[in-house]
Amino acid sequence: MRHHADWIHAAIRKIDADYQRSADTHLIKLDIPALTGIDIYLKDESTHPTGSLKHRLARSLFLYALCNGWIGENTPIIESSSGSTAVSEAYFARLLGLPFIAVVPRKTARKKIEQIEFYGGQAHFVDNTSEIYAESRRLARELNGHYMDQFTYAERATDWRGNNNIANSIFEQMTLEPHPIPRWIVMSPGTGGTSATIGRYLRYQMHPTQLCVVDPENSVFHDYFISRDKTLTRDCGSRIEGIGRPRVEPSFIPDVVDTMRTIPDAASVATVHWLETLLGRKAGASTGTNLYGALQLACEMKAKGETGSIVTLLCDSGERYLDTYFDRQWVAEHIGDIEGYLAQLQHLEQTGEWSA
Image (cartoon, rainbow, N blue to C red; front, side, top):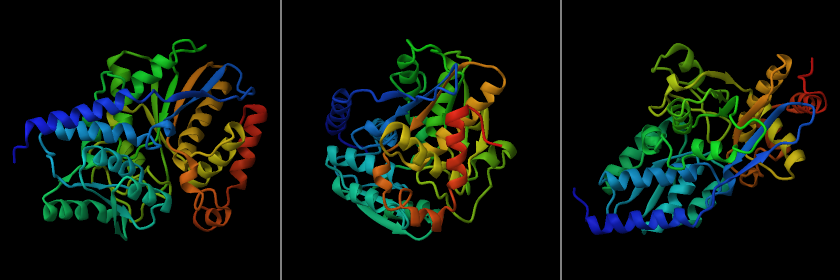
């Protein structure tokens, strides 16, 4: 079906105008004196209008779909999402006056559901994470809508060569720092689109920076990186919202990644509790996955006598997770004991080394 060009042009102008009204996200330098000569930075994606890294992805997906002629004036938008992408897509759907339905696991944080609804979207629940794909396709067929499918299109919807993508933004903001070319960029995969953008950009710009992708438990990405078996699946989903997948997603490109490691979920949650003591505010657990990996790399660099910088992402605000990752009883029941990791992080802060 060919959609009206005038409406598509007007829709693209609205999205571009919205982008022009937005400033870039901040780059925060962590104060850890014990890591002498090694600087760690957090790219704070929580400051986007919809509060997460996924705002960039949602904007790119809408522009990609519009330019492909997949979206018209009355097209319902359907997306598979654990929350943050759905919040951001609901924002852009409202901007264009389009109905939006997010297919989400029933365990998704209530705060995210409220934000989807705030922007005029609806949440359509499934019991198992693995059901979101088929249910999204079914709804798109029944409603004559468009299934945005972030897990397929994330890696191709963003211009990885530059055009103010997240990698380009990081390098521009690092220009005046003591180590302007990072030794490492650390990223956790949800769709795999952001790691694909960063990895491609690093190669295209011929930077020596290496990309480390950190995976939570119950995710297939790390195993796939090692085995390249696209049929890998898991029976249960990730406990770290927004990252980790029970199947290999089309947007994850392993050949642009230099190394991967799996971060224990308890370590991810402990890290955001520890980070709050440094920043005075809360971050989501995926930020803990990122930062724990960055701290591992920093300690390894220090042990080798190396200096340099490491950049990772603060993906979203912890205010979305007050009833989960920042509720001690919920953490004890669903994640486990985090005290050992908290002690490890405090020891690192004091000495620059992992505790024995």
